[in-house]
Length: 124
Image (cartoon, rainbow, N blue to C red):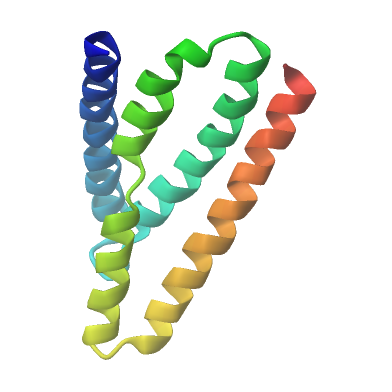
């Protein structure tokens, strides 16, 4: 149990750091007007989750799930940040942008996890 908790904590630190760096990079590239960093993180995280679900199951790597899925991806993906970003856009009076943000995040994240599953199932 302690080892598993350590894996989750270590993975969470790695994932959160990667999320921070992604958001900083996106802010520098695209500016502060739209939370594109969160969109990128959620889509990438969904894709990698799809890959890992298949890869870990097929390769007998489920013992790595606490580190990789709960820890790294749990720290990396940002649904709570997504919710805050959507509400912030709404409260700024940018309802159209808020709806676009929610729709893009949900639809592209679902497409990314399906793509990750497809790629993993056909390559592994």
